[in-house]
Image 1 (spheres, rainbow, N blue to C red):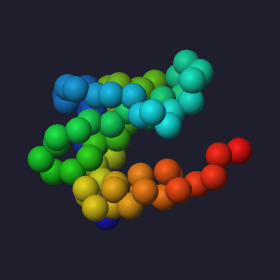
Image 2 (image 1 turned 120 degrees about the horizontal axis):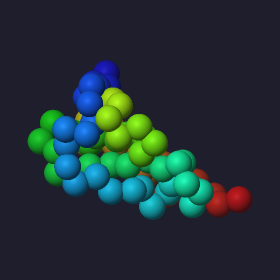
Image 3 (image 1 turned 90 degrees about the horizontal axis):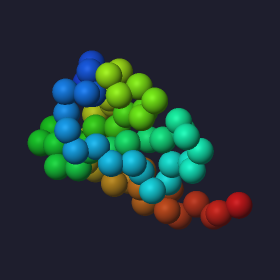
Length: 71
């Protein structure tokens, strides 16, 4: 089960995912080094919620994304 952080702006150190689109507003941001997992938020809503993924689940997701063929 994925947890949620109600206000993602309470955390610092967000970085834009290298897989986010290049257009303004279509960015996914992640936060490295969080003790409870990997927080992920929508950069258009920095005060909105962040999803908190278990480290193993996040790693599996990243491996899957990197394995996808580019179009």
